[in-house]
Length: 348
View 1: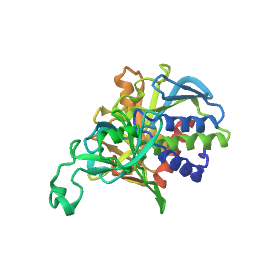
View 2: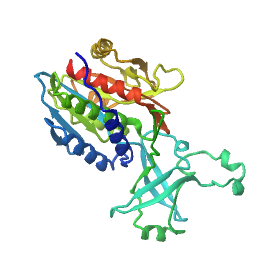
View 3: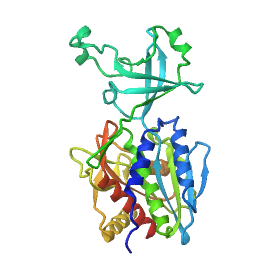
């Protein structure tokens, strides 16, 4: 059976919009709403939200004897205001696992409790080479030595607080999305690229008049970057769960930016061998290019569900992404391969 054609323009358009929608963990509701709206535009999906705010969309299949689920997450790395400093600038606390040097010099947005936004930049406290000389290179990039310089006239805590900025406000770093030569460069491709692949797969199948072989649940989580995204939200009748998350590219890895990857082991141990093998067989049958890899410093929503007591087989696939948790990049070929793999699995 030939797989449905993927509308790559629509896939990319939706990915751009999603990437440009700020959604640090804990403040992901705007991106959740965007995905909800997109899924509701597709027929045959029964959509609910759990109390944590995640989406579960039920897609009736030709059979319901062995229900399945796909999960991907829409939350991203980010920060919160830890302190309004005597200078009026902001000290942050990180959300998710990244190094401060990966966002040094990046533009950011502070979301105040009354719904306002304040722009700024994340800088080293001794940022000027003309003032601090060699200290700029020597200073450790840590919570103490990084600060947000707000793009407003403020030089005291009182002036900053008059803007509505306070401890606990969320901070999102600019994604800086750019597409060139079929490469997509942006922060937060982890995991918005995979959410876009799932949406594109559903759209392609429905446009072709096809449904899943088994009733399938699409779970879009919003707390993955802090480790408990899909701990709840997967219905107990589900027999197997395919996590769709980015593949890490780098030295010692077999993943690349042009293929989908199946991860067979990460920091939490091996994934389900039987389901992983079946996914490889499905990809081979359809000529879908993929790599097999292991990630030593990686965890997923599938493992979060396992640790919460989920009695399912779990496997993980996704597009290769270079410089994960940094300024990331992937290629359309990897997104297409991942979308094809999702469809081939759903149809099998």
